Length: 121
Length: 245
Image (cartoon, rainbow over all chains, first blue to last red; front, top):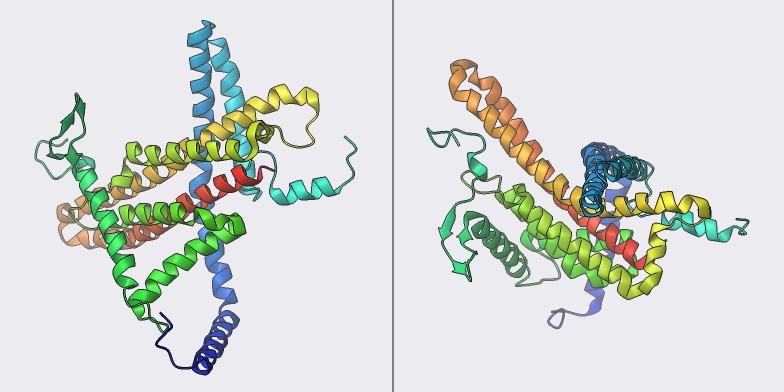
């Protein structure tokens, strides 16, 4: 793809120009970028939260109903797993809101910090 | 559906059989949903292949669009997974383009939005979920189970925390698929419902018309946003499977 191009000096010039243009762009729009990112995040978070909670409760209840059906312990396991599902739902919301991502446990960063500390537990 | 035909806001979601096919008693007919999936694949492939056919050093507009799409997903992978993420580029890029085109093609009049069907989105989500789980086991073996026990948890809390973490993990494919399907379904239904007021209100129909124009813009934003969310969540799941915590 580059075989037909003239010597690299013109390419270097082009590269320099591109870099200058990009630097210019970035210098100009940090404000724009921030406000856009915030709006996008706000909308995204609002769309995520409800689904996160309801799906966890749904999975909890489904597991409970299945185990009840299997072990013939109606309705107790459903109730237990409803509560566990709600807890998992709040956990999901907490993770979305606090920027832990969706990892079980903690974020890679916080895990790293933990392993840096001397282990007292 | 409405008896008068074409006036129900839900009419647009009806699956119609175009070419009836039956294999071993299973209905695998070619439907309008399948047709639009095919169109999405063809449009995505031609967008990329035709856009890159010259692959000039100084690109034209089309090539810039293709490169933007590539760099967008490449950047996403680098931010969420890191250098290791490069090898998952094909699957994430394919998913992103497929969902994005499914959402955007649905914005055309008389078209069909295949991402507004839970059957489609859940099939994608459960495939991602199973592959990511297999990936986790392949990378870490039985150590993958430590995923469900956050580091530093006291032993007596484990019987309570592990079920919660497992439920949280199992809820991933549900939330991934429901989010996409619900957004597309709700948006398209809303546009149709409000569009239904335009003719009924006569001159005052200008107001719902303006609203429909605004909502169409919003729907296009959501089409991009949901495709992005689908892609970034898949990245995060892969990241979890690779790095645990």
